[in-house]
Length: 234
Length: 121
Image (cartoon, rainbow over all chains, first blue to last red; front, side, top):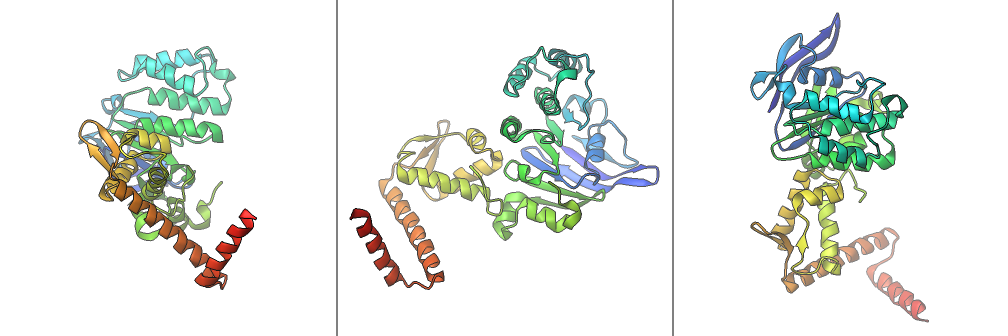
């Protein structure tokens, strides 16, 4: 469904992503793991069609990503992108105007579960509420690919269960889910495949349950093996 | 449910359901949640949830009826065998721990009898 072919991205002399090849198949939930600055966000922005690779290409169903693929790929970036004067309701309307696959009814259900209300103003939201709003508005789309960059960042422990459940509800045989995180423990049970990114390159890719079964190694263990001390974060 | 990330999650969920079958929390012939629901109940990947039912079926503990869902087996003998199997595992684990403490099975058995008498005293 989504294929990264030897993708490289340079910002000046800095190489953010290097020769990254990856095939994402429907029916799987992928965890894209790596410390901050390893290139996850840059790769996702390219897959979302927001920035162009310096070399290589990301293909959605065989065609390079761009304006057309954005209709089918729901992407949640790490930075907030709403105007402060907007209400939660405005955000939903804004998305409804942009994306054909957006369902305002689903959005209403999601914001309720996230304990938000339509009347709330963006400027009054705490960072945790903002994080939940971003997830709600992204998951209210009925897309073939969902890419969530750091969905658990800024989300308190109690709300994480709700987020995890909302994400799992979107996992289906015909969909690709890709979640990036440096909070590896959050991903253990929900992802079935893990992609480890180190210094812009793919360091490993594996079936998580097979790895546990064959070697008794968890995603977090493998993470420690790959990144050593540099990757250990709270 | 809190998972041990070093052991396959399908095995852990399977263990949970096996216990429910033996204790009667999930009685013979009762309907189990669908794969997707199982994923949501346990907060696990849907492919992992599907694996749970595949393995339970292989063990003859449940069966999938096309279009109807997955059900606990009605085979009482199979459930009795599972109970014996789980009891055996518990005994072996117990004896293993006693052995590490330097206590032989006969002594351990004696200790169990004493414990029981004390309880009833």
